[in-house]
Length: 67
Image (cartoon, rainbow, N blue to C red; front, side, top):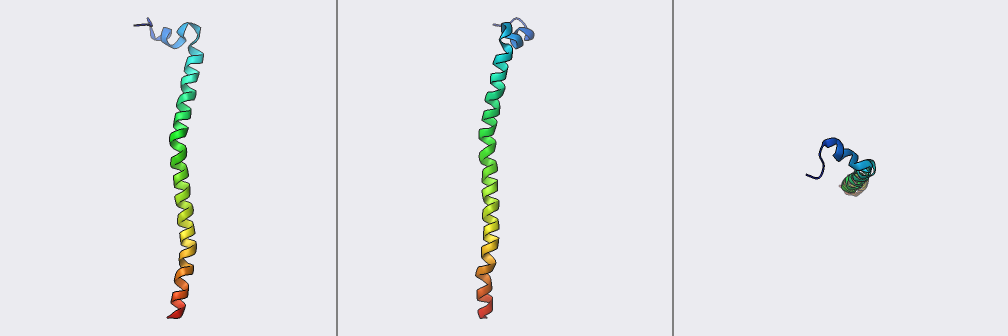
């Protein structure tokens, strides 16, 4: 094994801070790339549902008046 202990793995001869920060930044970016489209899809579906609810009564009401 390259590292003798967990402490040596975490410190990496003084470079551990930089390495682990880069890993955290990369994981945060990957998480955003996964979460952002899901949130956007939910937002678009809510907007479409609101628009459908707004337009649909206008389509139904003229036919109700004709009867």
